[in-house]
Length: 281
Image (cartoon, rainbow, N blue to C red; front, side):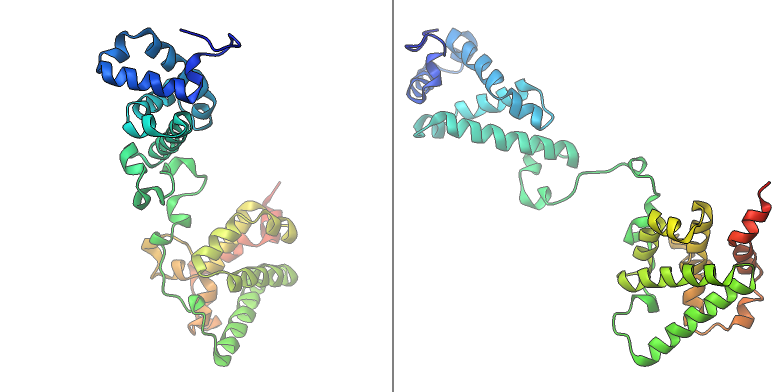
């Protein structure tokens, strides 16, 4: 392979020299890429030149060299003002598409299309700490008075009463009054900021600041959220466990009725911080 005047770089580093080499290889036929020493040297150079770009996208350098090879065989590269610039751009696009294809679990051809590339990478259920049913809206009930953005004065009175009754119920069943008020009001403040009950539950469940602020162990905090907001499991959406204490109070269930719900009463008693502290040795 001939060197340029400095003797340090291959001649095909110059755009015009590359153009002449590509034209010669094209005119010689497909076998020239296999037998011509200049073609071999060119591909080695391409693998080295685009190695960093390939690693950036998690690919092998020879995958980038393959993309360069595909570009070099096109007439547009031979006619370009700067063949190397066109090749570099083609390799960059291919590397991006390869990376997206790996993430989307589809072909590179599909990953190049905007209709597919707009999606996020595929995720395994095991990649997340939480179960899919805990955070994905497709598994949650969407009808809830807490989801309604149009709040009227009468609704505000009902919400205020529901919050007060929830605090009272927790206090009657073992919670210290100030702790019950702090926990219920914190949950309700986050619920008011969220677009849905399920979204508030997921946000609160991961809220380490709330646990520290309320001085509640993780297990007690999770129990409290399930009591107040309901269990997020889709198959329990229409049950008392799925509705949660706040929603049950909001739709008109009186305290006297809730006090006769043995399952709810047991859950509240077991969740009380004071009761759990006494149970510890």
